[in-house]
Image 1 (tube, rainbow, N blue to C red):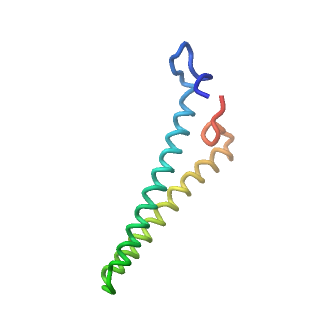
Image 2 (cartoon, one colour; image 1 turned 90 degrees about the vertical axis):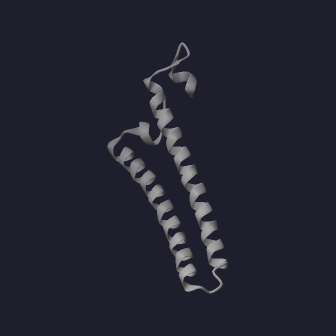
Image 3 (tube, helix red, strand yellow; image 1 turned 135 degrees about the vertical axis):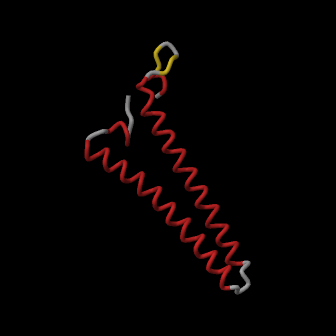
Length: 97
């Protein structure tokens, strides 16, 4: 993949879609890991609340925000993919060289 966009070992503008796709994939993985950590943290908060309503509410809010944040990330990726397919710009969703 990288060999096709290099000229004499130097990257060209043809490499930009590959870099963008890699950055998007890395961001999705990072968001997934952060969301998983927040879900585990919320579960820990909930189990150690000992019936304290304020701590239970904090745990529920943390879990809600983690799920909403993950949904926003996935929806934004879906929207970019949808726009690229509607407009015919295949470089964003599926870069090919």
